[in-house]
Structures are given as C-alpha cells and as structure tokens.
Length: 140
Image 1 (cartoon, rainbow, N blue to C red):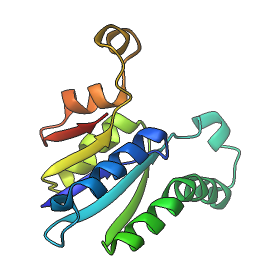
Image 2: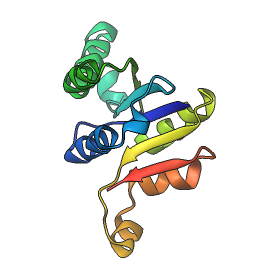
Image 3: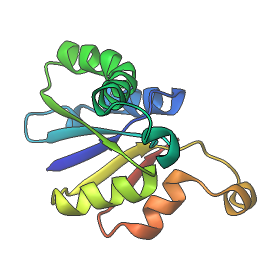
Image 4: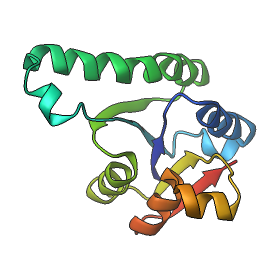
C-alpha cells in the first residue's frame, strides 16, 4: 500500500506515529511511505524582495525542522520512507499530492476539535476529507 503521511511536527503528528508503532500491520515492508510537510508560502510581496536561493533555503530549513525527528523515528523502526516538502496551503497540497502520487491512503493526525469549532474555524483535516478522493485515516 502506498501511504501518504501528512506531518507538521505537532503533537498530533507524534500521535499518528505512536499509532503506527502500536499497530504492527502498518510498519511492514508491504507499505511504502511518503512523509509530506507543507510549508506556508511567504507572501508574494515579501518573496519578491528576497533572493530565490535565500527563499528556497528558508523553505528547506522549515521542512527539515519537521523531518529531522521523523527521519530518526523511521530509521529506528527499520522502515524506509520518502520525505517530501511542498509550499502552499496544507489541505490543497495534501489532497493534490495524494491524487497525483496515486497514493492508496492519506494518514494524518487530527486536533480532534468539536464539530462546531471545526465548522467555525475550519481545519486542515476537514478540508482534506472534503477535497480528497483518496481515503483518509485520521488519528486523534
């Protein structure tokens, strides 16, 4: 199974990884993992005055802050994973990457807000559920 794991370095990412470790069926070699983090874009007016190399280094640094502990986690589990970062709005990017990459499942942590709070504030997981044709496993 080709699994896209959406990560942001939050405690909810850690809960998703804890779920993986407590369910042996998820850590077998029969699964291929792509870990995706989405870095918010620098506003266009600010990006226009920043050198491209500096901007790219910023995006890479932000992604690596999320990926560094995850690389360690997957290495300890003996599981290979691909680490990918994209720039943009998280929900849009997650749904798009899952579809274009022909993933079988999106796995992501959820903040677990009440339905009312999610309705008023919106949430990445709710938007991914609405946009994606790929099944989503939310871990709370």
